Structure formats: structure tokens, C-alpha cells
Image (cartoon, rainbow, N blue to C red; front, side, top):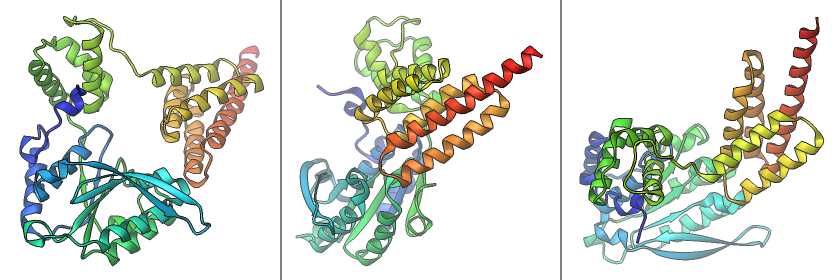
Length: 356
């Protein structure tokens, strides 16, 4: 039993459904032999991870699909022990250094050093280098990114790095200049609808075109989300109907309710209630920047033109602080408190203008 998003994930570059010209370029990259460091970026659900795994299979063969979970222990300069879980095969290792918080620099330096120092057993049957896949590179601290830049130069002979992230805006120029950047755009709505229809056909289901289009629009061109929504509709009821309800993730509904609570009342009591709701979202592993963006999008529906620009500046300022600081809740709550102050003043000025 597996989710459709995993069951129908393409296993090779030849089986990719869209961005076929890009797949051909990746094949040529493997055949040329001079394989550089890669920086793969694009929006969530565009197919970055799928393309990376297909690329690794093209490099090493089916051995990269035999994965195991490994635990690595790292010691910080302050003698604190950090344990990081990685996903590895005989040819590559995948790790999320940002899981270590502000100790991510230690993880990057020690892990790359460990992998780079172990040479392949039989060079004739495989590449002379191993691959390290670093996820969520845009969430790394600046210290970790500078350490990564130095380390990737030092161990270029024995390992290659594949970095992937949603946006390169938070990746320092020194890393971007040392990697071949590959942008994976989100698939078009027609491509997503075609894939949904194909998956449903494989499952022996009939997907009404109207429902398929509604799922595509609700997914916001996120293919992973579209497949999960389609499978949820299948669990909810079958046969499908064109007007059946498409379920949203619970955290998105909760986030919308939180934004509505902020707009409906601006008081210390309401701020405490919102803080509890923010804690609830953070403990469910919803990233701080996703919470900030979600609240901001909902709050914009209640702001006029002059207020929108001010609130946009505020959210940018506090979102930046979440990356500099350590405790996300402080900065999200500070943004909510500041918005309440600005919004209440805006309402009071509006009432005063109406009185006169």
C-alpha cells in the first residue's frame, strides 16, 4: 500500500511526463562525464526530487533505489551532541542540515568530510565520486552556507553536491556561482490534468473533467498536492461527481481561522489566543515562513491600498527576522501584534472620518 504520489513517481528520465527537453539535457550531462555540482530549484510540487532521483539512477543504475536510514552523531564546538538522520544508498547520501538548527554548519562540514574521505570500492563499475544531496538549502544559516562553499571546493575530487531548494534568493552568490543551476518550473494546469487522468485510469477510476479542473485549480499547480487531493476525493466517495467537495488540508483551514480571529478583534486577550494557535501550527511542523505567508495572504483581504503596502513591509521585516533569530514564535507573534496595532488605528481613523 502506497500513496499515488509515490506509486506513480517516474523512476527514470525517459519516463518523465513534462519538461522533456530538460530531461534530455540532464541525460547529456550524465553522458559527458564531467558532472558538476548542481543547484536544483523551483516551486513546491514541481518535481525537483523526482528529477534528482532519476538523475542519480542514470548515473549509478538501480542501486540508488536501495535506501537505508542512517543515524549520524556530530559534536559541536561546545561539546553538544547532535543526531541527524540521513537517507543513503551505496552511491549517495541525502540529508537536511537545517534540521540541526543553528548547528547546521557542523553537520555540513563533518558529513561532507566523512563521505568524501571514503573512496568507492570498485571504480571500474561506477563513478569515481559519491553524491551528497542537501535539501532545503535556502533554510541554511549564512555560516553554514559559507562553510558549504569552502567544503565543496576542498572535496570536489571525491564527491559532488546536489542542492535543492524552493528559491535561490536565500542562497549566497558564492554557492550559486559554483553550481550549475537547474530551474524546475511548476507544470501547467493541462499537464497536471493529464497526469491526474492517467493515474485514475491506471487505478481503474473515471475522473470527470470538471472535477479534475477544480482539483488542478485548488492545487495551485502543485502536482504532489493535486495527486493527494485526487486520492482524498477517491477515499471520500466513488464514483466521482463533478461537484463533490475537495478537502483542504486542516492546517490551512486553521490558519485561515487564525487570520480571521486577528481581524475580528484587536486586544491583548485575542493576542494570547492567537499565540496558542501559532504554537499549535509550529508544533505540527508547519514552517514559520509558510505560516507568515498564509496569515499575510488572508489579512490582505481586509486591507485597502494604503494599508496593504505598510503590512507588506511589516511581514517582510518580521519574516527576515525569523531567519536571523532562533525562536520563530517571537517574530510571528510580534508581526501579529504590530498588525493589530496598525489595523486598529486604521479602523479608528476610518470611524473618525465617517463621523465628520
